[in-house]
Image (cartoon, rainbow, N blue to C red; front, side, top):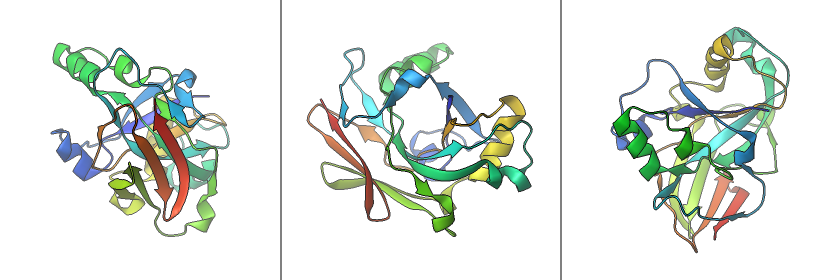
Length: 201
């Protein structure tokens, strides 16, 4: 099982990161040890700036390579919510040095994932999602705001990486990313339905 994460897939998020808009999807990988399926995230000691990035996550349901965009919708049928935790201080150091930044993205438990999956077919038009921090809304996103759609992402990714059943694609975060501290609580919603709760320990 692979975890493929998309960067800068919302215009406002790219702007808040002072990054140019991508002409094609930007992606990176997390190891499977990044998955967190419990409600407690233990703040690592190696970073002073862990930031949340709430994202829609789709699950691949069959093997595919060089998938045409018109067929991409047949490669997934469910989605959920996840958080791409980022050690922003480590990432900044890596960027300044021109080094890869998996250390800032792929650490253990950096990908909390809801255990509830929703059917794509129940959301014909748009998917609205949000994240609260200590009961205050900090992120709001909608699939209509994505630079690259689910189908476009699958088409692009499968040119380079064979997609397999069970692979997860974190599809990008909207604006509003921010720091977490011990004692914070994050809650992620699709519409008004809560799918994920994370306590920062």
